[in-house]
Image (cartoon, rainbow, N blue to C red; front, side, top):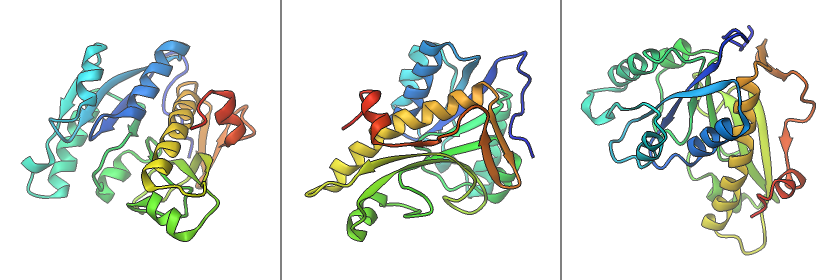
Length: 229
């Protein structure tokens, strides 16, 4: 199955889902505009009216929507309402950027090959919550983030790219989280750019990116981009 769902003759459309400030949404949107990708952020949708990222997106003229999860009696009804809002914008890809809801299998299957997430660990290590605490408790020397296609298995799915940061002596959860977030702001825009240019393919559960031999972003990459924390 190919993961490119759009014609190079038209701009790629992203819908980004957030729950809070959406710092990854902001980094993707800014890179898209600054670097002139053949793409646009068609909408930003949140499950919380208080999500501050909505105001930021609206300030750039990006359509925003809120689908409050508390207004729905269960996950299937919320996901159905969310999908209706998303589909109204006809996205090529749906990007999860700090969207703090577990999605139903039906929702994930509806966007198979088009639903992308970033997780703050080097999957398959440390799925779920409290990833930075898990990393510190495990005593690993490196930590990081993973951008992957979403499957019905939580924090699982074909990996598109990973970013690595060091775990330093005396690190706290907050310090490590900040370092990982800086790397997320490198990796996720890079992946979104590959998607926008139609370079990502998903076949037999594995990802290839045309013209990209190295999909691991490490310390050298972070330093060269000025993102070493």
